[in-house]
Length: 474
Image (cartoon, rainbow, N blue to C red; front, top):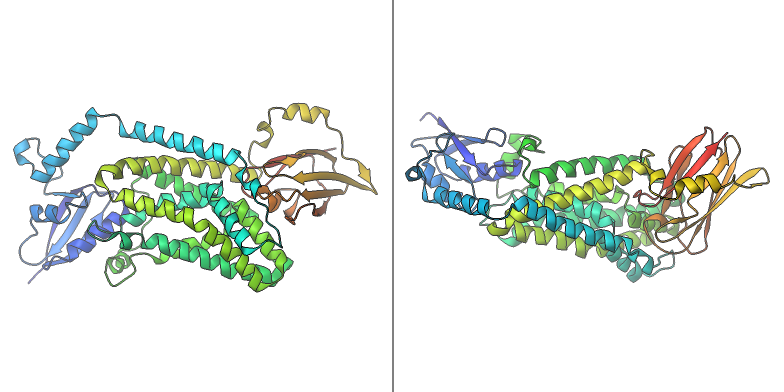
């Protein structure tokens, strides 16, 4: 018997993972042989043998998933032409229009959460715990817990939140909660394993290995731009639907099969890649693993640190699955999460621009101009300009220096022992390579360089949140 084809119009299909779910369910119908779903057009082409699948039957199948199939592109205006499910959707749309604007409500909720996050971050909670090469593994676990409550949550937590909707939509509504949290389990499994393995590499190689923070800055910017697109999709910007991060159809057909992993390999890989994202806490732990000189110790330090970040990341992931599964909360949560993802992405993006030397560091201190006018040139000792700085929990002291071009500079950086974003390393783009600090209290890290060109050069922690300026004059 020859296969026939029919095109259906679908309401509610808005992401690449929706295509996978629709194709999977339709292929379970006995006489359906081929399915091609398209988010861009809102159409599903079905190849079948014998009798064409009935629209009402399809709507019954996808009722729990909130997809509605139509024969015609334009919905009929007469109420009698609506199916019972369509009438219910129409009624809910009218009720929603009479209530408060969900986007505005979601924005207000997100603002409250953002303010709470900023207050918590400004409170300097990271300074309550000091870690060094002699700290116990329990201390590194607690250090990971703090990382989960700090600016690192804006980076890794933001990534988890932005991808939660994509991961959730790969599962149908009748599948269990345990099945739906699988991507989050795989993400964190990849994260912990990569931290332990690469931490061991750091300890084994020691100071001969350095991670390119310039490269990771570009990596974070790429992640941030991806998060912004996903965040805008989550709040309902329909113009971005065509920017779907999908894979070829022959792969999605395999993903749709129950015998495969439903795309869980990618969360595992993404979790592993977070090792290279320059969260200040992570850099500090990596630096201590680097100085440990032992593969076993380095693996334990990084593995236990990653375990410490696990509770917060699981809380974000598991909560998102639960909320996305509730029809009356799904839309609102999606919008709130979308606004939070956009904030976290912009927050991270601006800071990484500072790391690369493109930020507005000089405008961040209100008394910067006064400092520039009052500060003198660095003193010259034994033919070298000497500048001294102490790394505190939330700032550099001092954070502004003035040196002459062409004269060697000796930069002495003292660690206070207060662990935070800035305690792992210092990036001074255009002046010197990344400076890895010894985080132990009172330890002095020395870096020497010769400034070649006059100008203002910013330096910062890996996250770009703590900044300073070295002015080079003729």
